[in-house]
Image 1 (tube, rainbow, N blue to C red):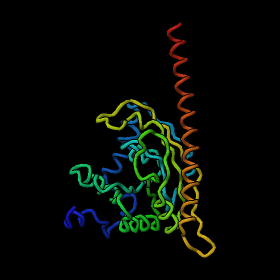
Image 2: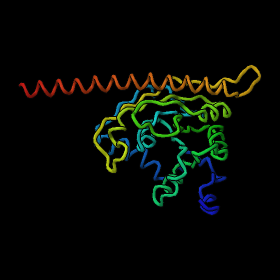
Image 3: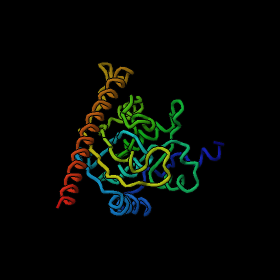
Length: 250
């Protein structure tokens, strides 16, 4: 990316955006109508659990597992507040999607190495009292299983002094599987767990040991939540098959 293109996607000094009345229409339309009330019902609907664990005010990180490109908008459509997004830089280079993301509370992060600019932006957003969605795995899972977490999520939470809300997502791997170019039918199951905080060590530092311990706890909670959502999905599907078999028998 050349210097002019790089500057185009820098965090603007106007951010965070003004209060509710100044939200861009595209954000309101997408996350409060299009996704929750049109797209998701057509795809198969959604079930959301633990929404009370998402703070209604103040800064917080929402940390989902990541299996599909549709995870960010579908998770945002399940949240009670507007959400900022940290997304890989390459997406901002796409003409239409990049412009939409830039105008709707997303900012780029360079996944190779440490992107100090993006980390600083993330801390600024959280200290301003906003929600920020970060995928702690850093990239999509190839097999759906939750892999090891990177330390960036815990680092940002520790520096900003905000909680991390674990978020397990099941179903998006069916809605838009890897390599697929079109959406498929599939029901979304989304669960928000109890928030956790990154506690500094006795000397007040965010040491690597502190960050690793917080990350390990986060990933374990995500795995537990995911297993719960998989069990709910299996129960729902078993009940549907039973009703279908009963109807055919009748």
